[in-house]
Length: 138
Image (cartoon, rainbow, N blue to C red; front, side):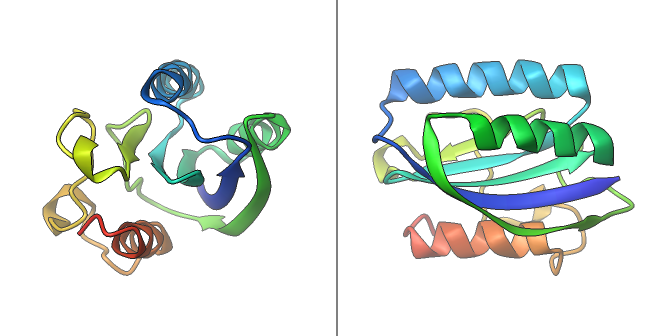
């Protein structure tokens, strides 16, 4: 099993409808591919963690890189893992707009370590918490 974390910039700020469409398609695709993960969006910036079988994850990342809705895609880290961080989430999501904090059912409360796996030192956990903190989510 492999994980991959990347950041990117939206080519234009996305509204709620565009984010909902992105999330709906991503969840279906990830379910079909047995990928799990988390997507954060705030003020035109994305950070995403994906996890799954290496060949499927790599092919999905190539598709993501070709998506015209974002640019400046930077892979932060990737590696092997034994256990998923987001085993029950085809795509957890959080928009960092403070007004929307409670509106998404799959919002990960980064202040509550109990929602993540026990290993709080995993790079995926650290990146998500850093992104959330930098965008005043916590």
